[in-house]
Structure formats: C-alpha cells, structure tokens
Figure 1 (spheres, rainbow, N blue to C red):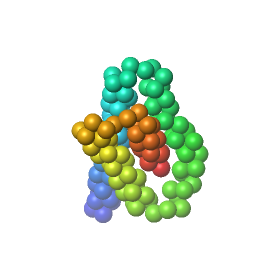
Figure 2 (cartoon, rainbow, N blue to C red; figure 1 turned 90 degrees about the vertical axis):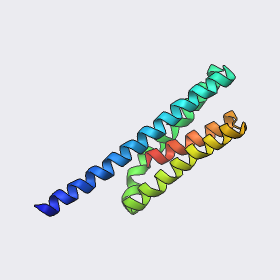
Figure 3 (cartoon, one colour; figure 1 turned 120 degrees about the vertical axis):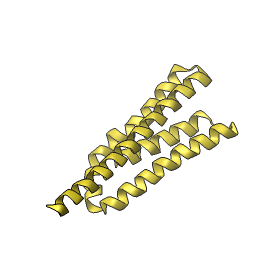
Length: 118
C-alpha cells in the first residue's frame, strides 16, 4: 500500500509540473500575441501568429501519440519542456534587446506549439 501511495505522489508531482509548464507556455503565447498586436497594430499578423501556434498542434497531434509511444516518455517530456522553455527565454532575450520581430514570433510559437503537442 505504501508503494502505491508513493507512486501516486510521483504521478501528482509529474502531472502538476506538466500542467504548470503547459500553462506557462500558453500564457507566453498569449502575451506574445498581445505584444505583436500592440507593436504592429496588424490584425493579419496577429492572426498569423495564432495560426502558427495552433497549426503544429493540429498537424502533429495525429503522429505525436505514436511517436511518443516509441520514445522514452520521461526523456521526451524533458526534451519538449526544455525546448519550450528555450523558446520563452529566446523571446525574452529578443524583447529585452529590442530585436524581436514578427517572424521570430512565428518561428518560436510554431516550435512551442510543436513541443506542447508531443
């Protein structure tokens, strides 16, 4: 019984950290969409950014389950979370340096959406 409780505790820790990571990625995508609209005023560019965020999810969700079943799940989650975090850090560095452009956001949001799918 103790071992089962210990396993359940591990699961809750893993689940909560994954949900926190997903929440952070979603908030980052939303903030970048707002930043793009505020800086360009273009509804078209903002819509394209939203598309870049969700198209990888739609296209990759078909294959993501099969791929993640073949790979080590813990390593896959760790790599995907690290790449999603790198996208967030990259956006932050580009904003602070004043170098952030719309194409950066398209690329970062597409990669972030892909990592969240897998």
